[in-house]
Amino acid sequence: QVQLVESGGGLVQTGGSLRLSCAASETVFSFNSMGWYRQAPGKQRELVAVIFSSSSTNYADSVKGRFTISRDNGKNTMYLQMNSLKPEDTAVYYCRLVTPRYVSWGQGTQVTVSS
Image 1 (spheres, rainbow, N blue to C red):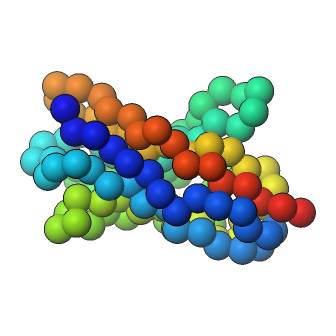
Image 2 (cartoon, helix red, strand yellow):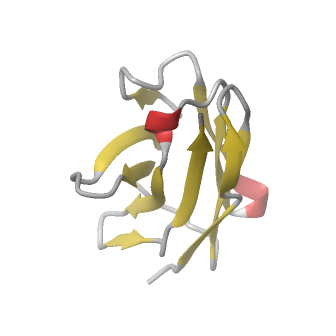
């Protein structure tokens, strides 16, 4: 199955921006959705944003207006542009791919927002 690798995490101050990338190991011809999830220490993993094969998107209420999910089919890569970051955005961010045959997760990338 397709392997996913996230990158772009790091340390940023409150109000700053980061762009996360999720690179797939090969072209995905058929998928249901691709999404970004995050997990903060002591908390459950939660959905941040998702993009469907129709190109429609959904966002968690906590990130609406600040985060933007997108895909570049030519580069087999999905992105999460994060603006106006807050300390509560601190978490490990994971990308997920859902296809008709399997679900694949990346290994995660740490995002830390300092106050």
